[in-house]
Image (cartoon, rainbow, N blue to C red; front, side, top):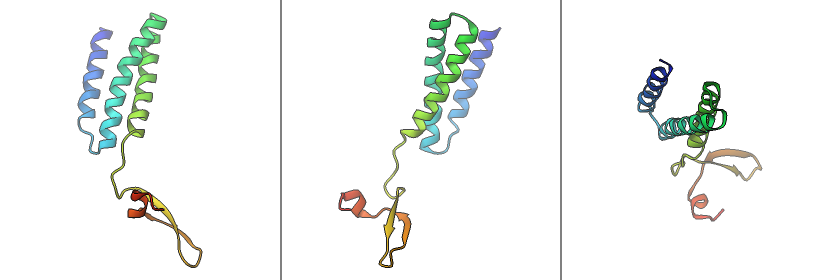
Length: 104
């Protein structure tokens, strides 16, 4: 019975991961799925019981989601840079071509 619940949870997570709107959300969902599966396998191999498998799956899913989200590349124009005007005031604005060309 527990196996069927686990399969249902994985299918539900996969269905919800497909509904993600942004690339970062999609990468986080995919990372959570892969990390959860890998963590469950490692937890089962180390502990050999259900508690270890659940802890491994939860840890792997969390780590996979964090890594998937953190490795999402930012598109050009979405990065923010700090600038200083002639009066010495520092402000933040989208980066210009100098940043992308390495001329900063």
